[in-house]
Every structure is written in C-alpha cells, then in structure tokens.
Image (cartoon, rainbow, N blue to C red; front, side, top):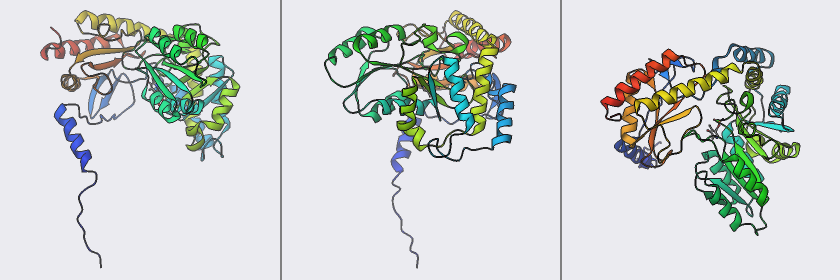
Length: 405
Ligand SMILES: *Cc1c(COP(=O)(O)O)cnc(C)c1O
C-alpha cells in the first residue's frame, strides 16, 4: 500500500534566490518572439523596434539562406543522427568547414555546435594542468569555463592592459608549461575591440599560443567580415581563431580556424565535438549560403557601419552616456547606454518596451556593479525612420525617468 510522505522541497533555496533577485529588481521574464528575428518584430504580442539582436546583417531571414535550409532538409532530412566522430559527419559538414577555411584564408577549420562550445572545447583541449592561460578580465564566459575545465593556471589581466599582460607573462617566463594568450576580438558588453596587435606581439615574444574569440567580429570587422585578424592585418600570426555562426551569420554554430594539425587535434580531443551531436544538415547549408552572401553582398556590411555611425552620433547628441567614461568606448555596432543602477536600468528597459522599443537591460553580474546598461546593437536592416523613431522613444522615456537631464 502506498503511503504519502511529506518532505521538504530540497530545491527551496532556489525560490529564496529568485525572491532575492525580485527584491533587487533584476529578476526577468523571457521575452517571447512571435514572428521573425527582424529590426521590427513582435515580442509578447507587442510590435517593437528591435535593438537587442545579434542579427547584424539581417541574415536570419535572407531568402538565399532560407532556401538553402529548406533544400538541405528536403535532400538530407532534419538531423545528423550521431556525433561527428561516430556517424554524424555529413558531406555538407565537411563542405562548410572547407568554405570557412577558404573564406578565412587558413589551412583548416572545425565547426562546433556553438561559439560557446568552440571556445570551451578548444581551450580545455589545448591546455592542461601544467600550463598557463593569460586572459583579459572581460573575456567571454565560454573562455572562462574552458580555462577552468583545462585546469591550467589562469592569469587575468586588466581589460586591454597590455603592460599588465606582459607582467603576467614575464612572471611565468621560466615555467616549463605552455602559455596561451587569449582575448575577445570584440567585447560583447562594451563593443570595444581587443588589443590584438599588441597581445600578438607579446605572444610571439614570450613563445605563447595566441587565440582570439571573434564572435562579435565575425561578419562585422575585416574585409567582408573576415574578423579582427583581417582587420588588423595579423594574417598568419594568430594561432587559433574562433568565430560564431550564431550572430551575423544568422544561424547557429561556432568554428575554430588554424593549421591542419590544430583542427585534426580538435577532431580527436575537442569534447563537445566528440560527445555532442553535429548540426542538422539545414544549419550547415544555411551557413555555407551565408558565406556566399558575405562575399556577394558587401553593401550589407557598409550599411551596418553607416547605421552604427548614425546611431552613436544621435545617441550621444541626446546626452546619453554611451561609454568611454569609466567604461571602455565602443568601436563597433554594439553601443551600450550606461545607466549605472541595476534596478533603474531594468525599469528603463521595461518602460522602453511599453513604448515600442526593445533594448535589453544588463546588470550585475554580467557587467560590473554600478555599470548596468541597456545594450543596443545596430543592424544593416534598420531603416533611418526606425532609428529616428527609436531615438524619439529613448529621449522621451530617458527624460521622464531622469536618466537624461
Ligand atoms: C555570443 C558569444 C559567444 C558564444 O557564441 P554562440 O555561438 O552564441 O554560442 C562566444 N564568445 C563571445 C565573445 C560571444 O559574444
């Protein structure tokens, strides 16, 4: 006979922590998109100007990409059926890797399920317990997790502080372990560009491996969006280039570019590659089409930068703090509106939404305490009219809430 036992919920501490977030004003509900990821779209039933997506070039809805996905689905079905090393390497996966390697002008490329797994899987595979990782303090969470998984000793330098990075490298110069210098190409919260040329020189001087995470630079910086290595003309000097297929490329995935041996090694030792199923063929096909578009429609990137210049100029003219004072100055389509207080930022974001503008509030611990912000991201497909409308709303709500003087 079944008896009912009462027990206290072992997960009740989660409820306590959520209540704490609610008290602090930083609790959020997920906003749900009803239609396509586009400059104007419908979240939670409300039509808004979207300033929050990473869809830099509007490729999420590009007809050629859509068609490529549909054609691949018809031809190859919806799934790959296995991890890459068992039975889940389809011809189209190899084609994508070759396409990216050609685009980036490197020997070889491996595609992971996401940018996150590309970083975490690569850093943790390349380094071990005896090794050292010299890392910018604002590097992405996936780099931090990869570094921890590697069990290497982690040395963090102050944001873009090259002298500090050198100090750390100098301290370990007589250690026998391998050394990795790693930076984001574009920092995702402030939109500034990593100190790639100087760090590359340091890596050369101290015999370290040089690695860059170009998630926000893929499709945005460099010729046709080839990334920061191309932007800074550092060809052949950065050992490991990571990019994402989930942002400007419009679909999903991450990739690592480098020598043939680096890629073969990751085929054998990259844990997400070995232990997690590969992309559906539609994703690979979409991404191949995206690289064709990057080469055939450079006007998209020009329009992105046109919009970015206009947006920064107008936001600054309104009197918003768009970074550069006590925070890094943005140099890319990511433009933060620094508010400071976490609760005020979240309230600001909610009020903007009510008036038809989607700008995500970002607070501690994603950004430092006291530097909460609305992060805006420009795309190539926003029209001037939409931008002016968004600026109107930002001005009105900013004044009403005392964020603008
Ligand atoms: C978004 C991002 C990633 C993760 O990329 P996904 O493809 O979304 O997993 C990695 N690094 C940086 C700097 C990012 O901004």
